[in-house]
Image (cartoon, rainbow, N blue to C red):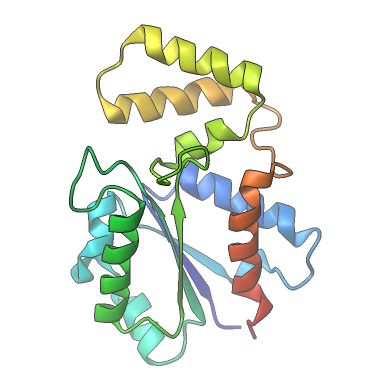
Length: 197
């Protein structure tokens, strides 16, 4: 059984990893081809590490070269172009990740999912804004009002606070996988396994 790698931002155990594991386990109950045991998660740290060839583990790059690794899914935040003109924003992120995939010679095995806020036309955003978009309007308004009146300045603190508020509010059912905003990510994950061996 050849592994499927999922590369995500952050550390080994974080919100990206947790969301993906829960969603894959949820899908595996409905779709028999999905086997969570085939997945190797790899935390890339900060977003900028995705764009440096030296940050990819040798085990992965050699595995792709020798046909040991079956597929690679990049999951990366779009973030905001106004905060980072080089890597920020959906389009910049997509263009830069396509360049690195070509440099690594991963084209045959790679797919990409860029986390963004589906409510925003230009597709800016990140995991936390994506999750916020999937909760009921009343709860969403409460969280957004709290964040607005608290006047947190740091983007990183904003993301962490948003995540903590969400976890406190929804400790038993953390994600609404039936929400239509999850459909693209569910499709992307299902396709990983649809053609797998």
